[in-house]
Length: 222
Image (cartoon, rainbow, N blue to C red):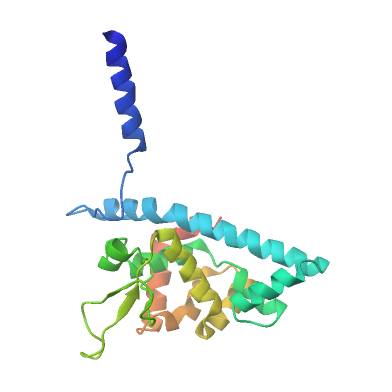
């Protein structure tokens, strides 16, 4: 009998270990600020770290190939993906920006992982959809009172992070941001170039800087 009890105890313990602390779909009611942030970091930080590392390795690999004049065909294919023509532009597109900035934007755009778009669509960064064939959900409020705003619906949070990085890497409005991130490690200076991400412009970049400072997010850049 004691062996049966021991087996059941071990089995139940194993189930508890594998039970996630937080999930996307479950947003606890009346969370304290500390709990809300803990849930946010638990759900998002590992994914951001994973994607950032992959992009970093890809950038370093392409840079090495360029220096050694290797794999030019693959490099040309990447240029098509990122819709650019020069080696320099490709390196600017591939280099991932600091995770502190990613996390600050994720915090704002997902309301610290509690927004409807986050919970129902795995959309961390408020990425819009203009393609009716994409998976998407409608915002509750219409633009100018008449036009429906659609937001992308992603299968996973990881897909959302990848699409966000690609958007920053390809959109013309972030050209100055890409150039600056390649030459500087000053995240506060970098966020000033993200004023086009939001309609509130400079107020948005100041909010980003404030979140980075207050939450000491640069620790994720080390």
